[in-house]
Length: 492
Image (cartoon, rainbow, N blue to C red; front, side):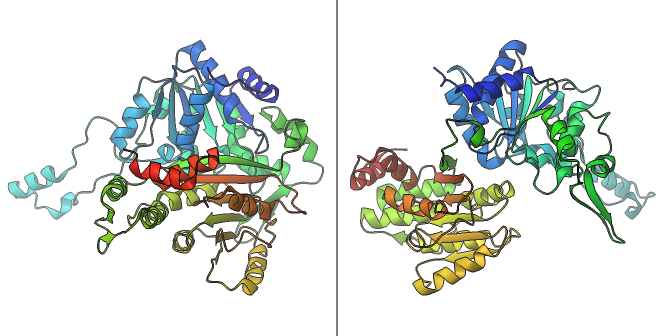
């Protein structure tokens, strides 16, 4: 049986079902948009017999599949169009399932055009040379042409409803992704009248102009010009180099709110009595390591040796505890180019403005995460046990001076004493086996002076010791040694 909705979630469900065309669910983070969306989408599926398309950031694809298992009927089927390779993704988009889940990357993926030498480089009087030129021309297989979108099924296949989670990612009106989404509303499109549901707790990240693409999808005739829209509502400054769009013009707040309310529902935690007392909310995420790393881990569990083609040499580990620790680090910073937890962090930061705290258990893991985030365009601060206690407060103060700084720390180095209320998002990439350690870290953000709901994000790597730790922390009755021994002996 699917889980029931709360009263306030039923309001969200009814709002989505009653909306025409486009509907925005802009509830504050913590209110919960996923569950009522799944229930409403299932009703649309039953009514139309068509599949539901869900687009979300890559790090949330598996979470949506898990939530569908909780809130949709037990027979609901799901296809993940987020695998490796365009062929696998096209097959998933075409699958005969109730829900299709994909990442935003599919909306902007294009088929690359193959290049051949220009015909002028061949001698037209030389038949062999001319034949060589003709043979060099690319053979276009059935399907999308070079330069076209790689997944035409997105707007060519009819959907019961198209859901966009973290819908603020459509704010770039000129981006390839947003332009491709606009294809849904072409007059001859199979989805010209398909409901579009936009979910985001932060519809405006920079200025009110961020919401224009949603207005265009809602009513493209009335909202056809971005510059007319921002000229009506925003302070616009023209310089010799650029035209800068600022915040709302004086006296336009009420009119703007009325406009947004005409197609979107926005509630805060304070609006809902059962949630108004919340101080923090927690959410789990799961990542999957590259197959070669999973194979290495499984072999190590049996033979206590860590061998991988990207490691300089094999590591022979004596004792279950040492192996357990080494594999934990391998789950966070694997030797491969693909590092799922680092990739999770980069994607997560795209949707999370403001300062963020990342916690690891091991120093090497924290260094690897900090290094992996160093090119994301936001300042990164690292604190581990190698930093003297007396210096940590000053380093944190410098981090607080930044608006969107990233703080990476080990749990033991920054779980006590220091206030981190500058941030409201904390991410655990590795965990202590003692629940109290995580509680202390969370308390760094929940100290006096915190005015926001603290959001706690737990990231777990499948097929690693992470899963044993997660079970141990959830049960809190199983001894850690028992959990570790169980995991080492469990077959994959």
